[in-house]
Length: 168
Image 1: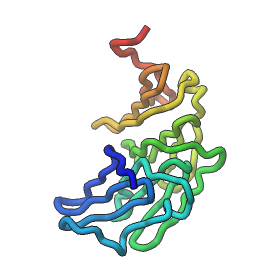
Image 2: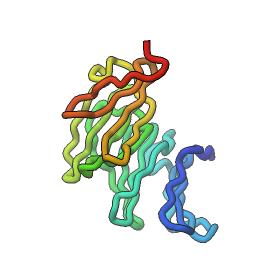
Image 3: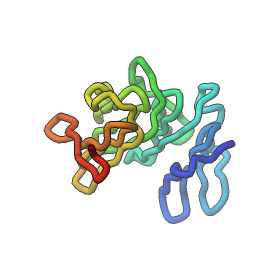
């Protein structure tokens, strides 16, 4: 299985999750906890997990190439319905309001509120470019990187372009 270099999620000093091309595994004290591994791409063939996020209650959110968001609590795996169309999710982030932002490669970004209401923002709101990454800063603000139209900041319920050194 392929291990995605950016997808280790540290839970404590001696515990972490790792995303693979075949699912996710939990490790503690250097040992894989076989009872907490999820194989078979979490129920979907041909999928890889690309992003993980703690749920704040001891569980894990995981997403990847199928565009499905999974909530893992103990031995229970639940799919969170994000609607159609589904695109690969490259990044999961939680903002200062507790909303989860799922960055979709070709489909824009999804905002999932704590009560699981999903709002979809299409890539047309980001000048049409595919998204590559999301980041939440220390002030709880969402930043999005694109493949072609630069950097965006979520401000006042809008995505605002932010100039960078290579902006034209």
